[in-house]
Image 1 (cartoon, rainbow, N blue to C red):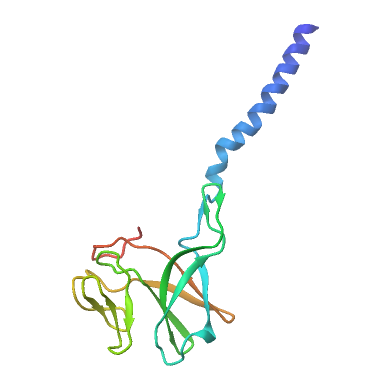
Image 2: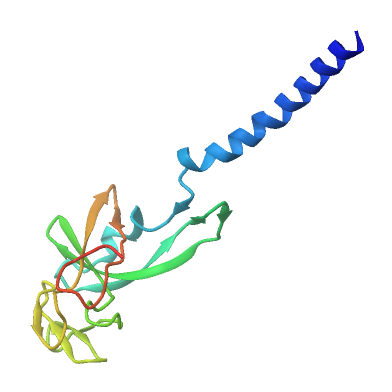
Length: 165
């Protein structure tokens, strides 16, 4: 009787430990443990963008990014230029494809400029001059209600192809 009782009790304890341990081992396979980049993020109200198409530099703030099992407070993960064109909005990364410097918009010339290595980009993001191997990285943008959302991604620098980093 003691052998049977010990076996049943030991089996119960083993199952009680094995269940949660197995769940902990399998959990990462069906969970998204990193969030923030590569998702649509609200970056502006549509009415905040000039109707004349002048680009506006806005930060990309992810409201609750996750890294592993750590949930962070709202975090700025980068910036984008938004340009209103009629009822559509186009978005470009502010990261220069040459060496990763920050791009500015020169309103007097109507072009984007990377001051670090003198790359110039047309108002549509195409390379105008300088060492940049490709044009500015255009990002997916959409309008949802009165908000502008951008799918923020980072790309490898120094390459002629737009490859996710």
